[in-house]
Each structure stands twice: as C-alpha cells, then as structure tokens.
Image (cartoon, rainbow, N blue to C red; front, side, top):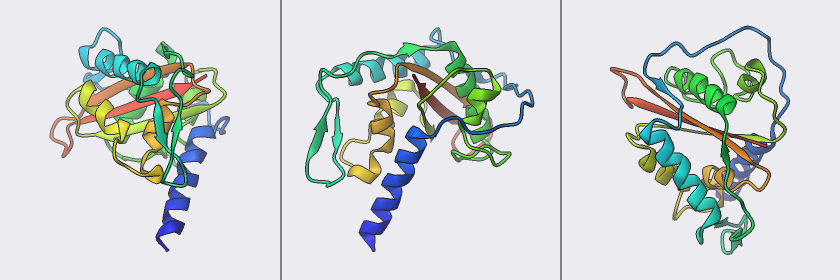
Length: 190
C-alpha cells in the first residue's frame, strides 16, 4: 500500500512538472497585495535565485531515483536559469493566491499554470514550487531542496533541477495575521 502512495506522489509531481497549455479564461488578474515581492532587487528573492543557480551548477545537482536506492546525477549538465519578469509576475499572483488557498490549484479551480497564459507569458514545459512559513529566501530554498527525502519527497528538488527549464520567477507574499506569515512561489519554464 505504501508503494502505491509513493507511485501516486511521483505521478502527481511529474504531472505538475510537464503540465502545460491548460485552458483559462482571459479575465484580468493582478496581485494587489502591498506586501507582494517578486524582484531581484529584494534580498530574499535574490538569495533564493542565487541558491537555485548554485545548486543547478554545483556538485549537489542530483536527486534520488525512482527506485529510492540510487541517485540521478545532473552535475555538469545544467546551466543557470535566467530571472524572468513575466514568471516573477505570475509568482506574485500565485503567492497571494496560496495565502488563501494553499494548493497548486488556483482559487477558481483551474491549474496553477493558467496564470502564465493569463498574463501573456510564453511557455512550454513549466513547473511550480510553493511553500509557506519560511522567512528568508535561503530558508525556502533549503526547504525546496528536500535533502534526505526519497523520490516521492523530492518533487520540488526535481523541479529546480529540471533539464528543460531555462527561466525562473520567484515571489513571496506577506499575509499579516496568518498562521504562516510568508507565502512563496517559484515558477519555472523554458
């Protein structure tokens, strides 16, 4: 039974990684939170961005393979990601959304990736990482890095090491009075 749950988790993570081109209505949406940040001029966004690129191009570019006993090494195979303003805009919108509904599904019930079409971002393969409660960019990166997890627990790690990804946008939303405070989103695309 445990292996079925692991398989389902792996399939879900893979679906999120490769899901693209979802339909969406063309309704305009913009993040209105004054506490929403998604710019490289922000120290926490930059720290996360730099950590992801060091991770992709460094000696820890591997994940646990689906058999849970070997590693898939990507050392020397990945390049740094470019910070993309459209993806950062999408991440800002999603960060505000997950502060009310923490899921890869948007509040209107559509896939998280519909935000990309909605803002006019061109994409093919895309991925999304979400998190809550981390105060700094370094801390959220460490959470997404998912050290010491098996294959089913390394979906965020595999997203950050995605071979097809060339661009990244990172944002967070501070929600005053919430249980977790800061909500993070990383959008990845090619």
